[in-house]
Length: 254
Image (cartoon, rainbow, N blue to C red; front, side, top):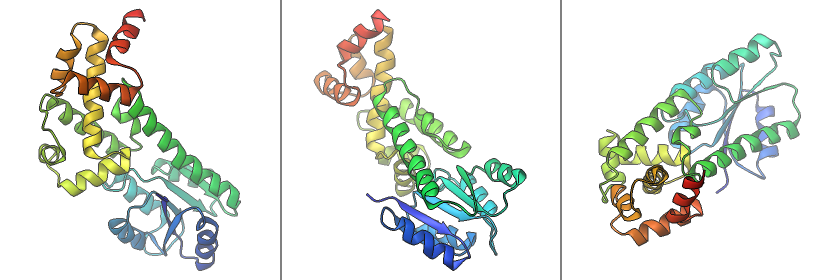
């Protein structure tokens, strides 16, 4: 899937220039001020926002603050562009949660590298979380709002791990969220479906228990909601590249 980038600037020439530069690699949406940008975020799945700082109606600082404190958007990286090349201006943007701050005039190549790095780093962190048995889910958080959501989500899943029927419907109920909202938020932060995240959480909990060496594999499988030891073993191997038996042996030798 091609990442979607939202460009926000009241200067049409800059919007047209950036849209042309980015259009070959990304899906590009545009807005002329922060308020219009928020309206687009409500309707579209945006992967990254590039915003000018000085704009009418709502400037880039306020847009960045709103994005980073809003539950639905806090996971979206924000790059601020500005002609205000003072240290105080840069500090202000970073305090508000901007992921990068680029001064005008800027090199298009520099901007493209910043975009690619932000998107690539998030992908690598998601992969590391999913494939590493003991890495906590909050490692994927990029804001306080994200961290609080992920910790609450992880706690709720772990409280219901023995329920083999736990799915997105049940999880949405215990999280007191609508199913579409929960699905969208998990997908945006983790690039996983809720059911995939539930399964990974089961396997990570299993890895914790296996590391203690105090339980048989079939007991661990039952404790994390698997009805079949064979199915548990296949899933563990597929997710972490090692069998439960090999994992226990590795932990005993450490």
